[in-house]
Image: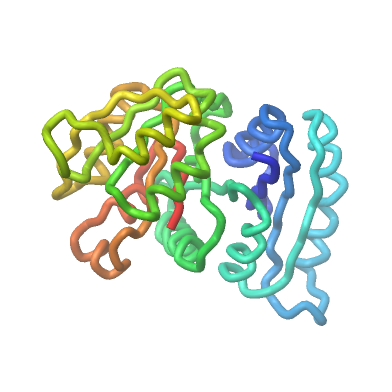
Amino acid sequence: MRDITVNVGSATEAEPAVACALSLARRYGAFLTGLQVVPGNPPFPSAAGADAQSRRAWWEALCRGHGISGAWETPRGPYVPTLALRSLLSDVLVGSLPAGSPEAAVLIEEWSRVLLEGSAPVLLVPRGGTAEFDFRHIAIGWNGSGQALRAIHAALPLLRDAHEVTVYDGCRSGAPGAPPAPWLREWLDRHGVRFQRIDFAPGREVGRRLHDDAQARRAGLLVMGAWGRSRMSERVLGGATHWLLGDSRLPMLLAH
């Protein structure tokens, strides 16, 4: 994990997503880019752009205070495409989860679009949570999809450091109790990731069931693919991604 981008916007150091990004950058010696996207066309100055620029000194001082290297960027353009495009120079994009906030519907829509635009894997941190991030136990939602594999790959530094990894296997392939696909198991073994497997039947309220069981087992992070089906299908059927974006109290690392 060499490059991390955090979608700061107008937030402060007290925002859990900002605190998490600072913590991860310090832990892995990563370069941390603070981002505040300014809507509008680049040639035209605006009050929002001036305000965003004025926060550069604050961000640089914050990074120095945490002993990390970082930079402040204020790209101008359409919010979602600009955020998704800039994130591709990072190993992970950190942002805030609505966690039942009044603006939940807007944030769900924005993060859904960012993921579907083909952004870097996104680490979403619930608002109103603690600034202490305990990723010693990580839960993985495994359904055999490319989205899940991208999320697992992005989470590798965290998985290596975890004391416990639980794979919720929803593939329903092979005998009961069988491990995930041999090539995934071998890949995790090769990277020193040991895990326990839990058979997890797909079906109704899969997002809520996955979240609640992981939380009950004291997992500190949920890793999974996002929007494995079409967005319309997920909305109609009550899919995992939509529920988790709106209601998760766990930090989540998602990839599409």
